[in-house]
Length: 64
Image (cartoon, rainbow, N blue to C red; front, side, top):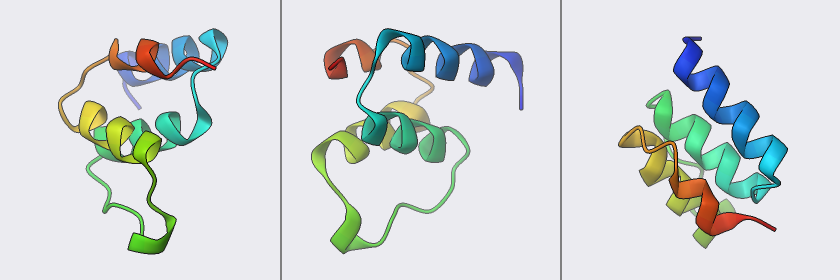
């Protein structure tokens, strides 16, 4: 992985971001396919979209 990916994931985890958001962000960042429909939720979908757009600050709305 590149340094931006690593730094972003570490920051999200240290800040206590919603784990579903983090998983979505990781999959979106890597352009992986989205989860199957029955496993989707709001946090995952928000993370996926943020990851696709390389947004490293969107997690702040998903702190627990």
